Length: 396
Picture 1 (cartoon, rainbow, N blue to C red):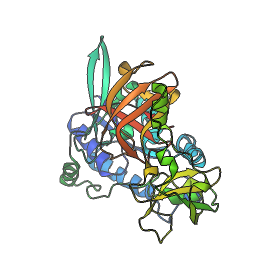
Picture 2: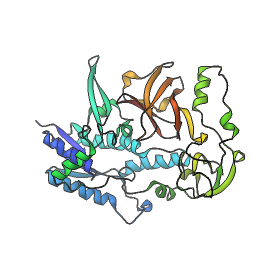
Picture 3: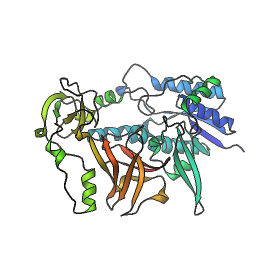
Picture 4: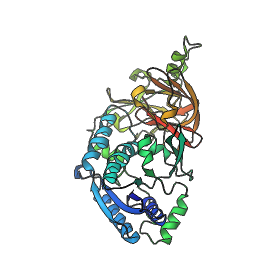
């Protein structure tokens, strides 16, 4: 009897080829398209991208001669992703909708629907791989980076669990992107030359800044420029009374007030901006471009500094609260007082950097060997051993 796989057909080339490869491998394949958005009040343009994507997914399914269904997950998406995003932005944090969408929608709600349909597995078009080993008589699953280093998407899946990985297949994880497009062209799939999506996860061509402005009311506030000579950047203790004090010093973001700099412009809402952002400030006349180094949504103030090397952009450490630590490899979870040398990243496409995890009763410090630019609350830090993503956490 054939094993049944439900493929999340997004209307893109990657999931299309994933479905083709699985059928070639002898699986019974079902295509399922997720419709996650109905609210026209936040539509950015006259386009209807989800309809175009749905049609492309249907045409791919017809070409491959596999069953195809559309499932409406808009209520769950609103509750689990969109509402959460707006709450986070309103508090001055910057969530990652793609990581959340994978954890909450694709590998939770969608997976449960697929399994209820009788599927043995769910498959996606992610550029990552899965490995299995037996430890103490139990199958333990590893999330590995995709072979295409330029497209590796393991960071987006850094919140997956053992249970989710057990039921997941990644058919294109061993393939390079150009070869994926080549396979699609050889099979005459309509998605062969389709551009990759640049919008919000499964909503489509919706630009995040405009999306936020239609939900969070504009409010004028000050843009403050902080000099790189500010005394706050020179207050480094010569010694620390404890290791915890040292970790806290390396991980604590600088708190600014308007007295720390000069007003150089105005903005329409601090919650529209994030650390490290350069575009959208609309302030000229500076020797070097201004970068956001901090935001204060309570006072509606944006703090900036000149140049990408401004000291306000950098620090070596971050903290993850206890209830926001997630281990994919539960068998490797640290106990209080433990440390672990890892490779880590704080954003997609960032190259992995050497870091040390320090587990405490309150949570976990991640201390990098080198200074990191624009560490941002609400984003995810993911830690690796070689090409295996071991776990992740929300940056506090």
